Amino acid sequence: MPNFRFLWGLSATLVVLSVQATEDGAPPAPYCVHSRDIREVRQSDPRTLAIRMNDERRYRVSLTEACPAATRSDRLQLVSPGGWLCGDGRNEHLNADGRSCKVSDMAVIDTREYAEHALAEHRGRDSGEFETIEVRGKRRRSFGGTTAFCFDTRHLRGWRDDGGDLVVEVSPLRSGGNRLYHAELGSSCSELSTASRLLFVSGVGSNVICGNAGDRVVLARDDPPGEPFLRRRAEIGLIARYGCPISLVYPQSRENRRAAVEE
Image: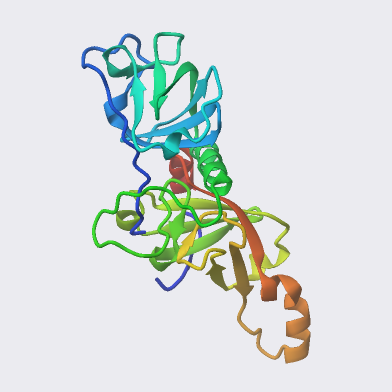
């Protein structure tokens, strides 16, 4: 079993865009998905969408033409025969604010690539503008993020070094069913292997870590018996004081979770 180090203790909101189907029926091919089962839509660039399904499958959807800011539309629709999205050149369109953009391709992606698309969308928004959110439970005034590419530090259970990056364990009940998240560090973090305590700092001043600018982890370790104070401070250095930047956060995939359990 992985050696997790325990911390003191996401009730996250989800970006849910209105995605509508036209009809129902049998799927035209095994790889098709129904638009009624889409849980979340992200747009990383004018011709690329990333969608997350209710069963946590993720797909990249390509458009034949640029359809910028489609996910900011008050009414976003994926229209296709029978409501099935296949990405195989059928009559499939993304409709947003009177625009119709044809779907050209669709591919399965992992949690890491989905997080990249979601973070790219978030970073591309104007300063001070956040996603339209559907709040489940008590409404919060602060930015909540999404469990698809963020974790909430209030629900941390433990962490471990993963070859220079971090794997954190959270409460799955408050993290969209995810127990493990991978946090990629933006620079070498040599003190990570000797750290005994971590402090996560959000660049947007919240409890949520998503890979936003300014998100970082600050390291600390227990004093070895008899080690001089000044020597200890010198060894900890700048990394421990200013932290290691976090560049990307994503849930571990089912395959990675199985591998972690088997260790």
